[in-house]
Image 1 (tube, one colour):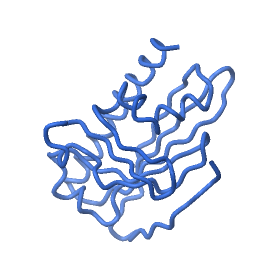
Image 2 (tube, rainbow, N blue to C red):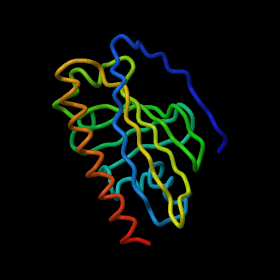
Image 3 (cartoon, rainbow, N blue to C red):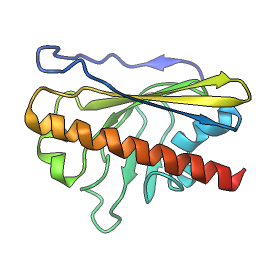
Length: 164
């Protein structure tokens, strides 16, 4: 896949410049690490219970945690903003039920960028989650995701280590 990008308009007066940044080293090929973010059968091994992903610009990036109620605790309606397989991927992101009243109707939604780079005999996966607005509710949501991404990356590493 070639590099693609969709323009995003941010109102910087409302958006905090703070960004969640996480990284992990995986002992797999870059293409496989990338696949764990775009293939439903692989992303469901570490992040969610079901997924609809169309790995193209403006393609669906919908992850589901509650299969009984797919409209909540999901990223339903989220889209891929940019993709350059197997180097990077960016997509919209929504929050769980406790944050959905303000996160899931925000314009724009928060954004997640994932970059894959070769480091020694492995792949460094770097995740940036941005678009946090300035309020107590948004700070709580950011703190939640700061911890959630740590846990998710740990499960990702364990899943890959068990499989390869």
